[in-house]
Structures are given as C-alpha cells and as structure tokens.
View (spheres, helix red, strand yellow):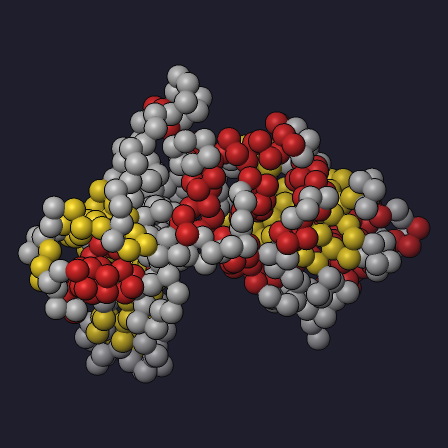
Length: 476
C-alpha cells in the first residue's frame, strides 16, 4: 500500500511529535531527504507572520520559479493583457522583390496545417494575392538584440525543446518534429524529418528488446545526429528538436507555403538579426538606447491572442521560450528589448513589492539559467504583494493547481491539499522548487516558498517537500 504524504510526515517525526511545535515537525520531515539536500522554506499566515522559516534568507537556484517573477512583472507593467495582442503579431511586407517576414515577439505564430489563430498561412495568402514571383524570403527578428540563449544555461540543452533559440520571430515553439520508425532488426530506423539533414546512426534491434533513441547536433548546425536503438515492434518515436535560428525556420516555412500557392521563389531563404551592442545593457550604455528606425508599412499583420492567455500557458506548463520572449517584451519598455532591460522591469516590480535586493538575482526569464538565485523570504514577500494588487487574483489563476492541472496535476493527489494549493513548480539539475499559496485546514490562505538545492542523484526531494506542506496545512 502506498504511503500517503501525510503519513510520511508523521512517520518521520520523533515519538514526542504531538507535543512539538510545527517548526521542529517540519524540520524532522526535511531531515528524511537524501544527505546533502539543502532546503529553504518560509510559510506566512494571512497577516504576514511566519509560521515556519528554514534558511529563509538563503539564496537558492529557483529553476522555473523564475517564471513567477517574469509573469508578475508583465502584469505589473503591461496594460491590456486580456485584449488581442496586435503589437505582438508577425507581419509581412514586400521590399524590392524580397518578402520580409517580421517578428514582434509573439511566441504563438504557427505553420501547423490545422492552425486557426495566429497562422503563418494568413501571411502567405497575402503575399500570394499580391505577386506570383519573389526573390529572397527573409526572416527579420531585429526587434530584439540577437540574444538567443541566456547566460548560465547549460549548453547541452540547446539541441532540445527546453533550450531552443529565442527570437522575436518565433514559430511553433521553435521546435521541429522528427519521427523515428523501426525497420527490420539490424537496419537503421526510418526517419521522417523536415528542415534538418539527418545523420542516422541509430539501429533497429529485435522485437521485445530495449532501446532508446538519442539525438545531438553542433550549435548552429542543421545536421542532426540520431543515435541509440529502437525495438522492431516499438511504436514510432516522436522527437521534438530545438532550433538555433528561429527566424530562419520561420522564413523557410513561409517559402514552402509560398511555393505551395504557386509563388515562385527565385532567391534564398535568409535571416536578419540585430547584433547585441553595449547600449543594450542599461549598466553599460551612456543614457537612453538609440531610437530604432520606424518599421516600414506591412502588407499584412497578424493579431495574436491576448498576452494573459500566454501567461497562463507559461505558468501552467512551464513553457521556457514563451517566458523568455515575455522578458524581452518587457525590455522594450526600456528601449532595447534585451535580457538586461527586461530585468530592469523585474527589479522595478520587486522594489515596489519591498523585496530586498539581496533576495534575488536573475540572468533569464524562464529559470534555465543556473546563475539565478532567490531567497524564500523575499519570494513570499513578492507573493503577498501580488495578492494585494488589482491583478493579483488573475495572476494567481495562472498557477498550476495541486492534483488538478499543469505541472502539479499528479502531485498532492488524495491529500488535504488536492485542489487547494496554487503554486509554480521548478525543476533543474539537482534543484526542485515550489512557491505560491495554499488553503490550510482552517480555511486560511497561507503564502509559501520552498526550495531544494544540491539534491543528490537519487532525488526524492519533491516527495519530502510535499509531505512538509501537507503537514503545515493540517496544522493550521
């Protein structure tokens, strides 16, 4: 019989459990984690009084808890999040015979055959209605400086969907789908792919055998190496591969659509980027960043869905690319659309919230960077400030719900916190995080931030974290 989270908490406590205060009870639960795990935890009641505090001002890698800070800063700084996002929609124009596809930071542009909203096909139709012959097809992502990866992101994530390049012109989450189908034993599997050239080093093994398909590629290369094995009776394996130059991919997709509509493309598919310059960093530049030249009139422009919908997507499923693009959209308020300018907006929000500067450091907007740091006490201060804002309820509704949806759909099932904990998860190398709000047994809403760093390879930290929070909820 599976041990419940609350039972784990009770079993972990010493015999005098009933006489202890809550703090030692929680510490006893945390002590059952693998040796070397470093925890930070703060739980505050509705008046801001701390019920539990374990290493409250320690600085921890937050993983995807970073997305809370980025999305809250967007709610604090941007207007009209619940309206269609015209500014974010991609546009197309014809410039001396070339087709220029321009990105405005919208992460939801799609080339999918079943697309109904924010569709690249709409722009292809506009070009086909205007001309039957074009020269180059150019993807233009110069709205943001060319910072495709943030400082501190592990290089091995780059080929994957978790580490795909960041671009003002993004499409289909900047991923390419690859299908690997087994062949006869001893033969390479069949690979269905677009955009990438496949270097197939994988093998099909006998039916019933074990196998795992891996892939890798060099940075900025369009040659994808497949390795590993797949059993002859296995189902086709779907791989999602990251893209280093999303603007080029978007232009390539558009060129394919134009040809399908009978438009002759006589030139090349290329991408246009804006180099990162000193003036993109507010700590380096002298004065305001230079004004960008006005954009030329568009032949057609898409209207993207509301940013509020995307923020819900970011927090519910922990979508890295969308969070990074949101940070850069925030950076446009400072002029350049750089990572550093986006962080200026995040810091401005945290100053309003009264969060001490020592309680945080960020190098990205998603949490993939190992340079990021947050302190539990500072995080709780931000969460309490958010709850008091006019948009606080709307933001809280973007968080996963324990046992119900998002990245918490399978956690807290069958406990007193199922459906009563609303929080952002975080997972990275040797790191787990969970911060947000929970409804205690008394009906009171508690604010919490819990982080685990230096988790040994055997893991288990999330189970311990969940048991501690169930214990807190039951005791309040």
